[in-house]
Length: 631
Image (cartoon, rainbow, N blue to C red; front, side):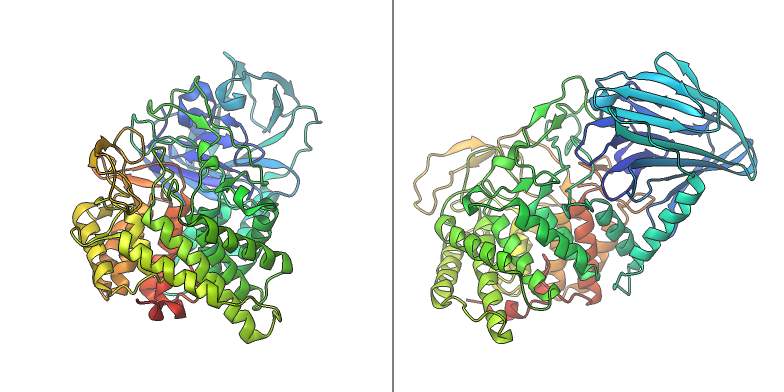
């Protein structure tokens, strides 16, 4: 049975990651990319689906973990009755190929160490052929190959590779695993101690670029490193999380593959990175975006593969039982074919931010793309969509989606105005029609999206249900935070969706629903769930951060700080967060580590300490336009 989600740490090479448990077992590892088939998949089943255990033979009396400084080099110290030993885990930042290194280091006494290597390619489906080579083993199966080299004597037993050995104080025993395409030659060996120094140095240089100073600096730095680990260096793409199918509700079916590049998640991630001084990552993502969405705007997807792949066919892996029995296990994601209006707003907001990162100018192709996107928004913004939460129920006129369509037009206007002032674009469009459209959109949203009886903006036109995505309205500058309609929305969400200080996205229970009338007032009543799925999920961490940002805007800073420190306490011992939190069982849920959650942490820390400088998803705290949009 796998560990608790919060018992995992990650190591990575900016192209893929591995999950390492407190028990010394690597239970998840995909190579050569985040979205490749797993070589170790015990996370979604048990040890027989593949893992690499390296841990004391005797049960340790204490386990302590840390990352070595501001790096992604993990150190786990096991204290046993006979001594103390450390396992140092890391992946060298990719230069040659995929390399996973473990070094067992004796600290005191003598400790017996067990190794259990169970390689199962293709998410646990393929038992490889294994052969001995000098100093190690080679495993081949399907398209994949792994080679493990170590001075320790290895033994084959029941289709697994095992070993037991003693480590005394001062000993350093290396294990180097390398992935390679099965049709290619086995990679040349590397020196584990040399690449350890290189890897630590690389992360230290990267971390030193951080511009954030002040309270919560350690938490912000760890979140920034985590986001960098989820960024695919060769392409500039950013994955939403490192895993697939970790459940949003134990035993439920809300199990999705997050190892892809959502435009929304990526824009939030790059906003957080650039806020902290990492502008080059934002520029790289802008280039990735222009490549992958080339073509007609109506063909733009809400997510892509890391390299820009468009066909992310959703498939059930039926031989994996799922994390703690939470089935099905899915690879691919059918939401890639959904229509979500909000992504246009997030992309246009990122273009505005990239404009500043590039010295108040965008490349010509970026201007052309921005223009085509807003023209498309002008044509489609009145249509229902699938919404930010990717519901698998009927399309509706979601309020958040409409607001983000408004954001797309608003940011286009600002982009043109900034360029006009800088004199960098001699042929800019007549903005009067865009300003009129922005006003018309704002008026409709306020009329149809706000329910006076509820005293809040609701989930969709004609609904009386609440949705935490409406916490974004003030953050994007749609209305000032002090507007009575925003205050009412915040208070209603606190009253109805807040559970022990954590915000649910929306009610997943069956509700008596008048239907989405689109403002017509004509719909048949029915009892349904808005997302078309069985009820039940944890509290959503990002929406909880959004609530705190609204509290900051309202001047309730002490309350926001208390809530922020409550969220910080949810991080595991090495500072990582998943997507959601189970309030009843006090444990993390959902895919891990989750970019959204770490984005929220970084930006809320900026807001609490007054360090924000540019438009992120908390733009209202610092976007100059936001004070003047009240209507």
